Image 1 (tube, rainbow, N blue to C red):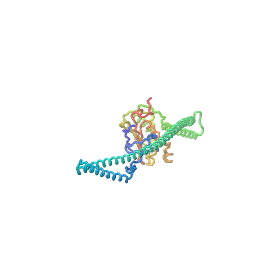
Image 2: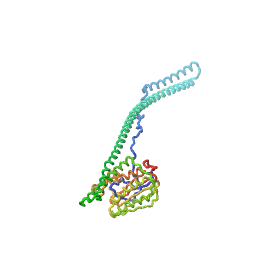
Image 3: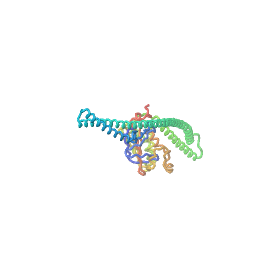
Image 4: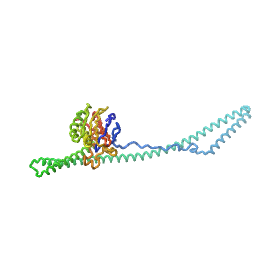
Length: 407
């Protein structure tokens, strides 16, 4: 579902399974699947600021440098004297000119010697830093090899754990398949025979109290069958094995059908059910899945809204989908339960569980159906005020979900 589909809960309502409280237009955060990072951990090279300076890396001590400098000055003086003596001996130049020529030669020799000396010192310093860089590079290569080896071990462990998880998932699917047969089949027999006895097809059962017992057996069997069906359905949805149809759904027709099914029950409970059918939009998705999704929320709203309360079912069009909203004035949800209300088998306290029943799977199933359809679900609730459940669905679920396949 695109991020442009806004969810703006308009009030609170209640449910023994509601959870994850958004703020304003916030949508529930859907964590992405956990993946192992294949990036090589970064290595921090040792700082070269600790590299030895030119004076430290040079093998020539300070006194040697001073001695060479004094030697250069002495050489310059000797050269100057020789120039003066030669000039006077051969009468080539006057004394001042000889002094200037000798001084120039001495300066040239001194500068040349000084440049050669400083370049030699710098070269030795650079050579020392280069050796340090090469040594650091070798250390980093060794650390990199160690980290790469650890990464390969982690990846291998991840692949093994993934295989184990897939095997466990297949085992769970096989177990649920056997559970479906081994529990639902006997339950169907119990329900069927209880109905047969209740109709007294082969004659009266005698004491009329037996009819009450038979009716209780039948009702209990049906309740248990529905609970088993919910568990199996949730397991199928969470494993991603559920394939959803790509039906063309008129949103207004969907809401009208829900009103017809829930309006009599709401009236018996003294609750007013209002449905706003002005969306005039068409969705591509699984009709049965959408109905199941909304029925779970409406069922909770009716069960947890006291007599005299109101329930409103509405829909509106967003930029890239439709938002379906169910708002009630029920008992609301406490803040400490909001964070885990979408978790399967999340139930209220024992008194409310006995009063309202259920396994706490309704909202979990609705959330799984919404996510498989490329949508999201958000819940906002205030205790004693009510709860709002907003479900955002894309226009075409087959384009955003691989589980929705056109017939």
